[in-house]
Image (cartoon, rainbow, N blue to C red; front, side, top):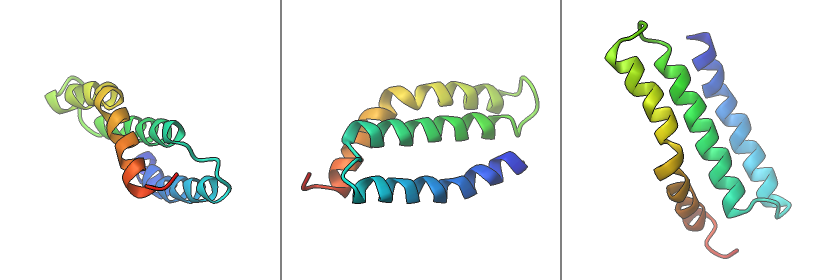
Length: 87
């Protein structure tokens, strides 16, 4: 549980780093997608470990952490285009 709380706090640092990267024009669609999907998959896998071993929820959480990459990456890229439309 403390690791999960630390990841939620770490989210603020990731958002700050994204703002800094955007300020200096270093943030691209691909970087944004990779950073967001990687963070979400790590957070999902950590949340899965909050449940007992071999429970259905834990197995589903670990599967979701892998599945975050395939549909999540194009969604994150579309989200980038909506947030920063003129780049």
